[in-house]
Image 1 (cartoon, rainbow, N blue to C red):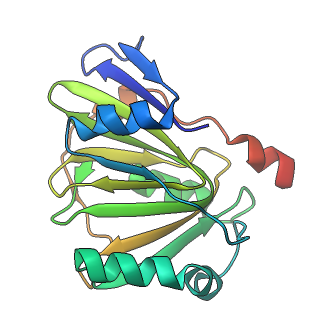
Image 2 (spheres, one colour):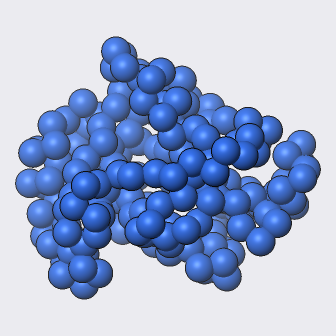
Image 3 (cartoon, helix red, strand yellow):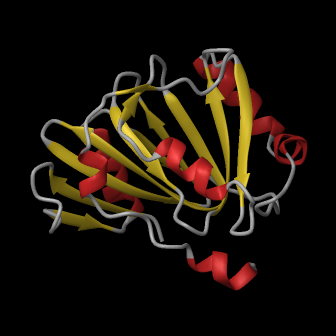
Length: 189
């Protein structure tokens, strides 16, 4: 189940509010300019699937997004708990950073946790299969996939170089909860 926990950025010990109803999550995130939508992840794709397989399965959705929003390139990140580089990949995204373009992810399997730092608050968003999140350029955030990652996400970019981050140097991400392993990770590994 998708989840949004909102914290005061100086108090990581207890959330101000918790939302698990998709429309409430979308409404709360929309107030701070974050796109959050529920799409149908109808094609059977599991972590470990190749980029070509995932893109082929979701070609119509990808083409529609690229045409509507001007994205130039697409890729896929697909990880499962036995991936040999999972710890290195996890560490890459765990520190607060920004991008010079919107960060758009559509989760077609599994789950990942985006944490956004906006307006003196921290918005921790557990994204699961069917969730599309759009983080505007310049938004401070970090991403966690847990110690046992289990997800497939389609990533869309306006920058042809793909994922390019500018790290803030702040240690705020170290003070907030990390993602627990997704339940599907243990069930399917």
